[in-house]
Image (cartoon, rainbow, N blue to C red; front, side, top):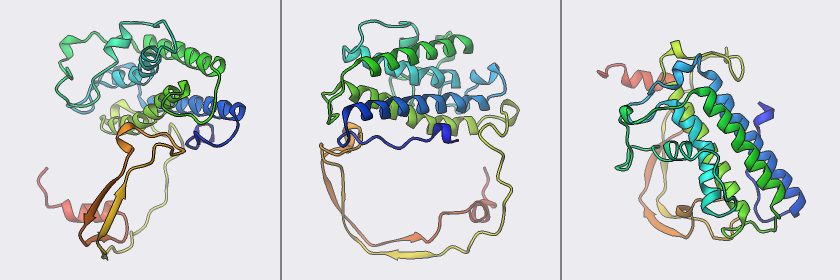
Amino acid sequence: MNNFVACTTDLINGNAEEKKAEIRDYFLKTYALDEKLYEHLKNDKAFYRRADPLRHPLIFYYGHTAVFFINKLVLAKIIDHRIDSHFESVFAIGVDEMSWDDLNESNYDWPTVKEVFEYRRKVKEVVLKVIDSTPLTLPINWENPFWIIMMGIEHERIHIETSSVLIRQLPLEFLKPDVFDVPCKESGTAPKNRMLNVEGGVVVIGKPYEHRFYGWDVEYGEHRIEVNAFKASEYLVSNGEFFSVCRGWRL
């Protein structure tokens, strides 16, 4: 797993040469981790399964994270050419069950897994060329070309999480075990949970525009809200605790 571990990039501190190398490494590890995730799929047929009725087949997400880089780089006029305009349209939108999404499979002619894999390889070359050839100045803010690169990386890291959930929803016949490591063999009884009192007070959320880590537009600014006292469990809910509560439910 060390080949995929990378810390969120500080966009303010450091020197330009080291920062460019850090972003390059961050991109490569994120891109590799995303592709490693799909090694859980046993065969190409699994890519065209809809693990969730409100989501596209997994082939969409396999192509989507790569297409995002190209579409944003073109929009920002950092590159002036597309790799595959069809791919950059069909894989562009369709992440959530919003009104603009079209989940009707008859409207799609998905490419092969091999074709998407090859497209991802070309995107990787383009992004690395942009990173290597674009001058970098600090801080990296919204006006900086490297903000687009960071956007693509952070977007892909979001999908690593969400796509892993979709893959877990597939029938086991479509999955391969032990892709990242051997399963944990340890087991035991979870500690008894209890509810703790949490005092109420003012909660402040949001980040300043000069924050040193990348943020999406909705994260900036400041919002204050008064929160009443409430209770929270002392520990995370264990599988055993959850099962004991829901065993009588009719699913």
